[in-house]
Amino acid sequence: MVTSRALYFLAPFQVGLVEEELAPPGPGQVGVDTLLSALSPGTELLIYRGRAPRGLAADVSLPALAGATLEFPLKYGYAAVGRVAALGPGVDPAWEGRLVFAFQPHAERFVADLASLQPLPPGVAPEEAVFLPNLETALTLTLDGRPLIGERVVVFGQGIVGLLLTTLLARFPLEILVTVDPCANRRLASETAGAHLSLDPAAPDVRERLAALLTRDGADLAFEVSGRPQGLNAALECLGFHGRVVIGSWYGEQVAHLNLGGEFHRRRQQLLSSQVSTIAPELSGRFSKPRLLALAWRLLPELGLRRFITHRLPLEQAQEAYRLLDERPEEAIQVVFTYGAA
Image 1 (cartoon, rainbow, N blue to C red):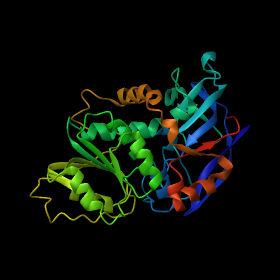
Image 2 (cartoon, one colour; image 1 turned 120 degrees about the horizontal axis):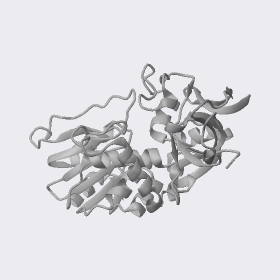
Image 3 (cartoon, rainbow, N blue to C red; image 1 turned 60 degrees about the horizontal axis):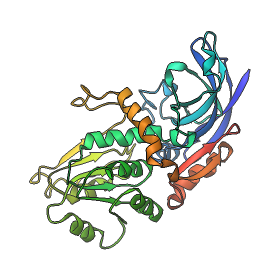
């Protein structure tokens, strides 16, 4: 019997490795040895800190997380790249040794249906492929925001999703693209990714500087991807008439206290939610999940995203990895787990 060590969230601020037995792959299945898996600091830090709603399903769209709820102990993660090492009955031998992406939790190896795997296209490296889920999220945010030529855009939050979003928005002919984040390393990465300027929300003159950059008319479009509910009020405050805020953050059990009394109604401001599991109904006639994934695969080698990987840690150092993201976020952007087969 093959065994695999998997990462489990055991309690608030505590993770550990659990050895599990894996059944051999059945018909239409393969066994995969993991090479890399990427941490998703937003959702995974909520779970690590014990701030995720306990009764909520871990994910309703990913088969690997089917039936799991956000309760301890929890095996989680959804960005794994590995190599096919074992074939189930009737599986084409051409699959053996193939590099694949899987929406799978952090674990040394796993068994999966072929239909759930994404073979890496030629020219896409494993260190690029681990960005697939978050790039898909950034693409969904962009679709939901629908930036127009010449618009003034602000992005609140430059974690990895925010940085990928900024990288995409920098391709648009915007009048100005400003980002806001408390970490100096992320602000520098943001400007490298194409932001005209990245501001510190704790700076005493940040409101004045942002207002001067946006002119008296304010922003046309803002994205809230900071994971901090208070970022919503800052986003609304910078909007102009009929401006829109796209909310990509998931706050878990945190409550957002919104100030809707001032100019919100007079300016006809809009609050829009965005979530990667679905396509906005008004776009679903033309866009689909497979089309979005195909676009993400095409863009991965073009965007040079591996530059955002700041830490490569073996799975055995998982506790240190989450402590780093929780306590010293100014030191890390994208953390990746490495495995013995890498």
